[in-house]
Length: 267
Image 1 (cartoon, rainbow, N blue to C red):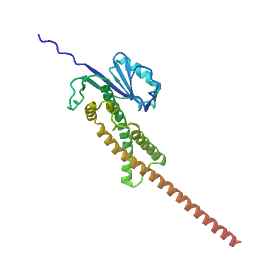
Image 2 (image 1 turned 135 degrees about the horizontal axis):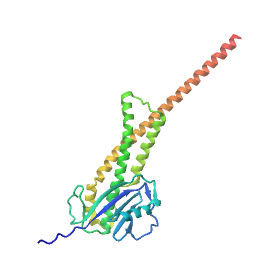
Image 3 (image 1 turned 45 degrees about the vertical axis):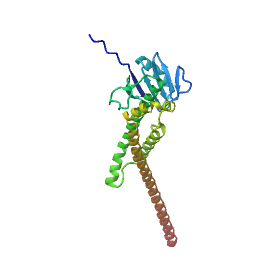
Image 4 (image 1 turned 60 degrees about the vertical axis):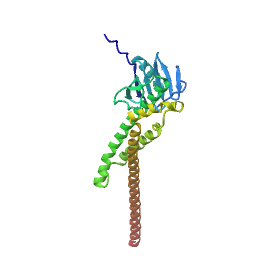
């Protein structure tokens, strides 16, 4: 009879984007890290809270997750319904330079705080990008019929209000996506632990963070160009309307002048 295989320790990391911002100041609990804020939850669980609206819960039970999310509720601004979320397995295993298997567990040598912070950082950026990708796609989809109409007819049947709404949506997404999360920046923990650079690089490749940011930036350029075009069209329509009003007033003044001259000569 062969001895039983030793069980491999594996825990779940659950990333949730709760809103646009989370207030992390004066948070009660056992603080493990300040940048980002990491706290001990339960016996062995860890919660990593990011100011840009994301929390990553590592090794928590369902009850512990629900209780901690309830604590975050009054600290969350611009709440999302439903949450954007993503899960991953973290497994104690030999670390190597090999890519992380697609959909497979993230191998780490040990469940040290530094390694958990790096995993949390990658997951947090991934979940934010997922929401941004969907919102940018929605704006691009709303722009497409407008662009097709312009290409076909050389003009648009949209009202000024419709164009202003589309312009507002484009500018809002562009501002939020480009200014909120610096995905290209590495986690602060790497300043003290440069030996963990390879782990972060593998996570960056697994979640395609750089590629997704490049794709988002290209779409944002399209949105920006479209917003500029919309502004030009709105300004052109307003200028044309003002020119027509001026022409009408001049013509009306001429008619009145001729009428006065005619009536004066008639007397």
